[in-house]
Amino acid sequence: MQYSLLVMSREATVDEIGEEAMEWGRAAFDAYAKSLDSAGVLVSADILQPVAVATTVRARDGGLQIQDGPFADTKERLNGTFVIEVPDLDDAIAWAGRCPGAQYGAVEVRPSAIVFRGGEWHPVG
Image (tube, rainbow, N blue to C red; front, side, top):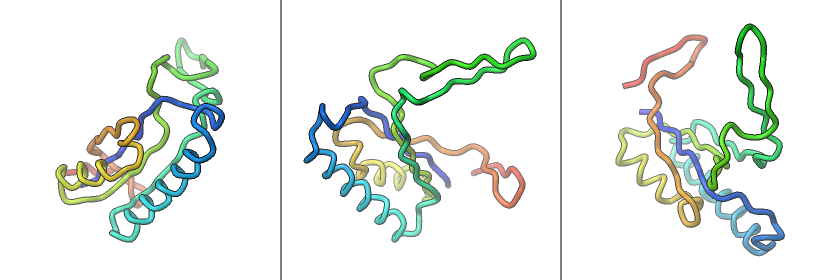
């Protein structure tokens, strides 16, 4: 089964959390991604740029509405994703619990419903 691990936390700058914490985060996420990869469960991983550089696009009334910034203003932001392929939800939860982001934010575990592989859509499950 394929799951997305959505890493959510309050965005902070290096000045706010300090260089030591940033170094810890880089090392922790590198080790986490490598552990997922070496276990053969990692499909993909992305660390997103800050929400300040996000652009929200809506198709309405035959045209595009473009907004600088996120769709919603919330305290916690989506900061990255890990897509994993594991046998079941229990395994996905175990991997989410090992994510460094779970220590200071939250990791939402969401199963995939349909995946695009080999040029086609495939239902999961």
